Each structure stands twice: as structure tokens, then as C-alpha cells.
Length: 181
Image (cartoon, rainbow, N blue to C red; front, side, top):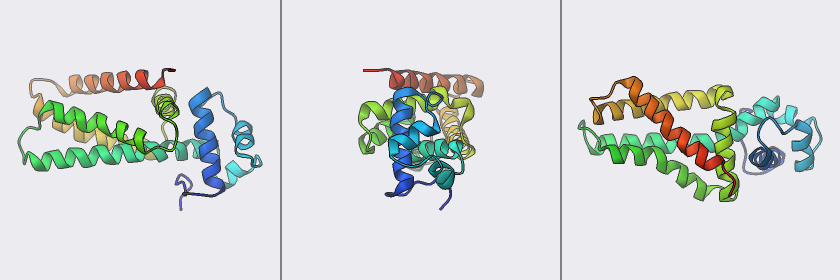
């Protein structure tokens, strides 16, 4: 098991759950290793033991939520491309394939909806420039697939324009998610 994977139980999971809750409530930069281990009821060395570093823990938290969202996005766009067999997929269906996986993960999450949305919003808002390499690679795969589908659906738009519009959609989602109730 690599250091970013999270088991279904045990000390490593307790650390991740404590970090998720604190990151959602206070932000990534405002939470110390000591805060996390205290909240998890564990000693301060446990983060280094299980994750190698605080950054390893952040990667574990992020992959726990981002990986299923991106996997579902890729599965949905692949299914649409198969269904439309080489033809242009309708724009509404492409957007649904991009946005709906987030809602799916909200329902599946063990966090409350409010905490889940705040956590994911903070991941994109605060951590966007410091995404762990594994998460960054997943996003690259998603962007490539969706830009390809959107370019086919909107042939009059340049790729740069499609990328800006995707950033706008993501920005709007992040803004909505990161807000308090």
C-alpha cells in the first residue's frame, strides 16, 4: 500500500478523517500536524510514520475524494463517446459528465454534505497550485478527454477558449462549494 492510499479502518484512517474535518473547517494552511494528531487522539510522529510527511497526508486526503470524482468523469465521457460512436456528443451531456460526479461523491461521502463541499472547495481553491503529482496527473487525463469532446461539440471554439470556459465552470463550482451555509 503506498503512502497516499487510505485503508478502511485503523490509525491511518483516523488521521485522514481528522485532517479532512480540520482542513474543511479551517483551511489547509491553518491546520498543523499537532492539530491533526490531537484531533485524531494520536502522537505527533504518527503522520510521518503513516504518510511520510504532512504533504503525504494532504495527498492522501485529496486522492480519497478526487480520484473517485475523476474516475467517474472518465467513465462517463467514455460511455458517452461509445454511445455516440464517433459523432459529436451533445454539450449538455458532456457538461453533465463533468459536473455530476461531484454530486455523486457528495452522496457517497462519510463527511456531512457541508464539510465535503467545503473540503473539496478548499482543495481546488487553496491547494490548486500545490496539487500532489498523482492528483495533477488525474486532472490532466480528465482535461484531455473533456477538451477533446468539447472541441468536437463546439468546433467553432479554439482549444484555449474551451480551456478558459472549463476553468470558469470549475471556478464557479469551487466558489459555490467553499462557501459557508
